[in-house]
Image (cartoon, rainbow, N blue to C red; front, side):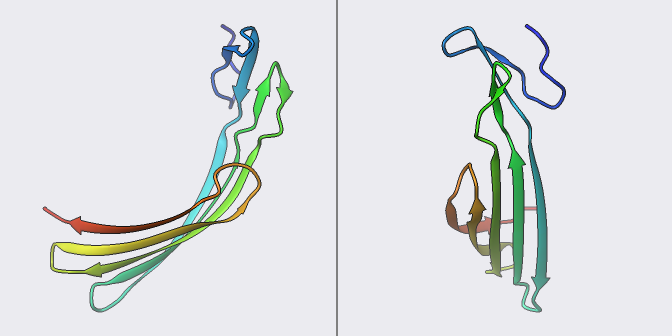
Amino acid sequence: MDRPASGSSPANDTFFPGNARRTQDPIIALQGHVSYDFDSGAWIALDGTWFSGGQTHVDDAALPDRQNSTRLGATLSLPMSAQQSLKLTYSAGIATRRGADFDTFAIIWQLVMF
């Protein structure tokens, strides 16, 4: 098997119909976070993520599937005791050209044992 071009994933030499070669470019991601601690021990954080890339090629022909997305999110952590906290998180897709466009919400109970 030939080595893939620099920066791309290993080639799939048995991609349908069995003799085509499929490769994928890497996905680049950037994240930023900012947080604020309250006197009570609670904290809030805002997050942003941008990612782009992942275009696939079949027999060196580029497919129109390059991903490009921006997401924003927030976390609120509320202390319940010295070793426990309750976290509320939300994340939303702001702009999605291709790829996963979804919103998430989570409630997390955290127990610190050390």
